Length: 228
Ligand SMILES: Nc1ncnc2c1ncn2[C@@H]1O[C@H](COP(=O)(O)OP(=O)(O)OP(=O)(O)O)[C@@H](O)[C@H]1O
Image 1: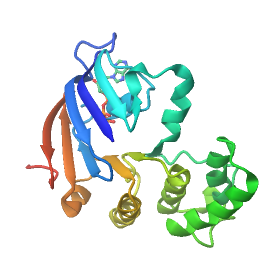
Image 2: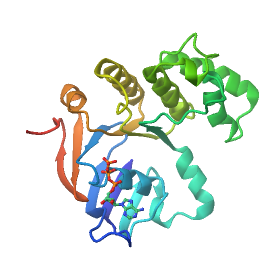
Image 3: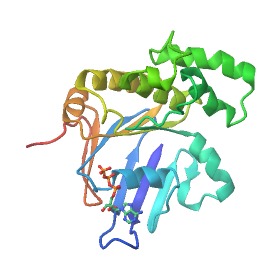
């Protein structure tokens, strides 16, 4: 589903590559944690998958998209097949819970009657049944992240990228959010989650990809966060 072959990203402003000769594959339906210290290349990896930035060398595939040779007019299609969740939720503050999720479908031209059918289902799925009319300011952090996940999956993407989705949440809420991501994964969506949360990685025992200084230094099938 995701494949990198000898990908290097050298930013002009930087002395060392943000990604250095990285080759990896994440299969359809896999759940992988992406770990590594700050600045090790995790966000750069996500940006490459979304074609928000291009590699200096190497090849990238997401599903059937050969990302690095993709034409500009196909980039929206690539991005529609990748759901994204972030540490800071990024909800539209002036829209209700349901409107935030609906908006993701409106921008890709889904008809109103389809939207009205799908949105309540996906809210129920992430545990927000009954909260459709709340505004983001009336939600807890965990609830905001559930809205963000609903918005990211409502279009049934092939891949869900989560960049430190529990970074602003307490341990119990973090665990609940990971359970939602796990459920999304079990439904067939490939999930890659960048995290610094040792507890979660150790509890889940899923694939662990570790970056250090732009290098892929570890790839464990049922990994833990690491020693020390
Ligand atoms: N636009 C840019 N221009 C120059 N250097 C950059 C740019 N973006 C990232 N870098 C550098 O690339 C390296 C990797 O950064 P990246 O943001 O991918 O790390 P990260 O693992 O996501 O870190 P964090 O855990 O803090 O989010 C860092 O040395 C960073 O300074």
